[in-house]
Amino acid sequence: MTVTPAVLYPDIRRVLAGATRLTTPCGAGELVWHSWGEGEPLVLLHGGSGSWTHWIRNVEPLAASGRRVLVPDLPGFGDSAQPPGGSDADALPEPLEAGLAQLIGSAACDIAGFSFGGMTAGLMLARYPARARRLVVIGAPGLGLASRRMVALTPWRHIEDEAERDAIHRSNLAALMLFRPEAIDQLALEVHKANVVRDRMKGRSLAFTDALVRALASVRCPVWAIYGAEDALYQGRMAEVEPALRAAPDFRGLTLLPEAGHWVQFEQPGAFDTALLAALNTR
Image (cartoon, rainbow, N blue to C red; front, side, top):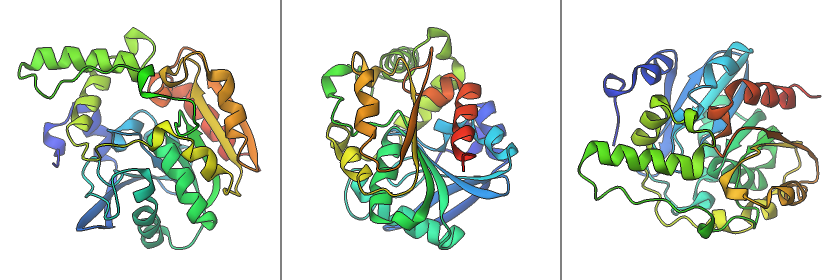
């Protein structure tokens, strides 16, 4: 399902207007990318049930810092086609690597992955270690710490009344994605609504394993992490996150941003962008 700019929330439409749309092959269709700015490439991978709009508050400031910000709709999400080899994060490295090879050649780039995208980035770099100069994982699962029982989401697809659906979406955003009630604004709601209806990657389970920990053991580039201090996936277990991430041989550190939940780059965009650029500018 493609959502055209004409029907998108005005803030999304404005940010999208500044992007260049690119496509690379993906299974029987296309992998859709958006690019902002010029300079050294910075690849941002979004979370599950998401799209490039998980970075709606970040792409412009990061591009203004002097980066070419490349953001795909991951295979099976947003406007991108299904991956050819499965329905979880381990099916994504091949089409992503092929897409990057087409867009930027063989050059190593910086990669930041949020949630499902952070786990995907780790799996990708375990297979293609030459692709990244630096990796930043953000709120990523796959550490062997999260379980399905930690967050209860309310089903919504059977609800026909739009207002009732919106109330459920707000409740689910509060349960999983955002810590502060005031962060669940109209933009958050519109981004979430447009994304969840286009999630075709059903039955994902790697997030509840130690898949990222095992992948990080093979990642040779420097690795940083940024998490919201109130991330719902790690309630009562945040102290265990950094030891798990130290599976990466060149782990450089974890930044916890206060007053932020799982979708940390949306809830605290200024602090997040500062933390991300500090990691990326470290030599």
